[in-house]
Image (cartoon, rainbow, N blue to C red; front, side, top):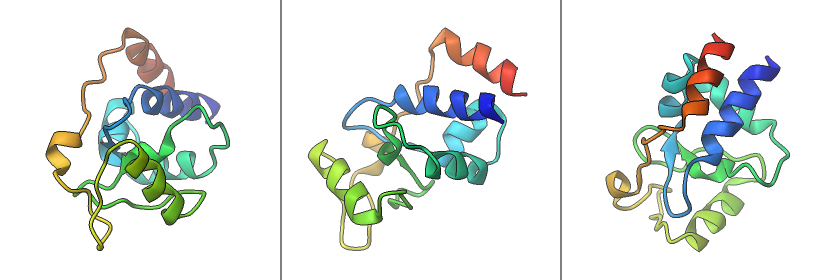
Length: 112
């Protein structure tokens, strides 16, 4: 279980400012269920892990352990625009899927 947390945090830390990724994308990289990724992120207390950059599959903001208003504020500070229904505008251009860090493959094999 601890390895799962470490792997999720490592992946999320690779998402650059001004970009987001989805629970499903993170989960697929690690062979996990998207809800398991959400549970791991909900428990995170490390400010160096940008959990606010992980959103739902269709571009809605989703939850955040410090509240949705704080998540929207952090995303907005990074240049991500969000409509009144909590959807990310121009979602496809903000989506980060390029997890090519070689360490990810090591973490993936350890978490399986």
